[in-house]
Structure formats: C-alpha cells, structure tokens
Image (cartoon, rainbow, N blue to C red; front, side, top):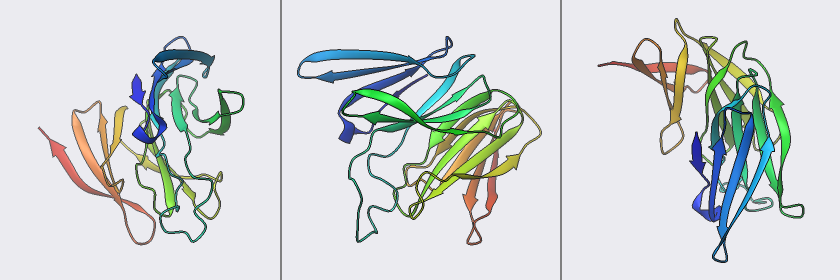
Length: 193
C-alpha cells in the first residue's frame, strides 16, 4: 500500500510493506530522501495520512501547533499504530498503539475531517470495523466503537467531508455508515452490485 501525504506536507509518499517496514520518501530541494523503519511484526497491510491540521483547529480560539505530519498503519500483528514526524530528529516516531482487533488489520483510513474530532477506521480479518475517535479537547486519547459484520473486511474509505464511512468485505458488498447525534454509528445504505 502507498499513500501520499496531504499537500501541505510537501511531496511525501509513505509505503507499507509486507516485511513489516514503512518507507517514507520525500522530494525536497530537487532531491529525494528515503527512510525506512520497522513498524509491525508480521507485515504492514495499510497506511493512511492524517489531515495536515489538528482536529478542532478550524473552530478553536487557540488553534494549536499548526501543521502536523502523522499517519496510521494497520498490521498483520492485529495492531493499529499512529506515527508522528519529529522535525528535529527527521524521523517518524510511534506515538500510540491501538489494540482491539483479534486478527489481521487489513485497512486503515484517517478521516479528512478537521472539525472537533479525529476519526480513524480500521477493517480487519476478525469481521469487525473499529472506529477510533479522539476529541480535540483531549488529543492522544482514543476510544473505539465496533461495527460487526458476517464476513472478513477488506477496505474502509471516508467521504471527502469525512462524515460517511464506506466499508467493503468478502461478501462483495459495500455498506455506508454515518454517526448519529448520539455518537453511535448507523448503517445508512447497503450497495450490492
């Protein structure tokens, strides 16, 4: 899997590898730099960048530190991991490990929304999608809600506005999910074609 960083971060490409490594390639000053680091014990299945701005920065009177360069990975070790770039050391550091899946994490997707919450969706071989939520008032604290399915799940993808989640699985169906006013996730549509 490969994923381009938000344009605010510059020309940066992250690559997930079955050998357990993540590679980050950056083009700056007419030159490519490359770094690779071990991310998951049994292989990295997916990678997704966070929005360049922190959650809540558009609606806050104190917008916070500004630009960020973070991504999330999902691995064959059943874990979801959040990585953040450190400008001083010019390296990516593990900032959080999210546990809850009981089988391979097949896909992860970081919602592009930068309103009051950050959302990460993870789809797994264990027939669940977990929606991880972090509130702007308490960054770094993640809670999750579990959506259960009857089949293994392959991919998750957020709408451009970041409020609708598409989930595809081994049954050749796509379902669309949206958070209601109570903070619960509801299926709004099944697509079978």
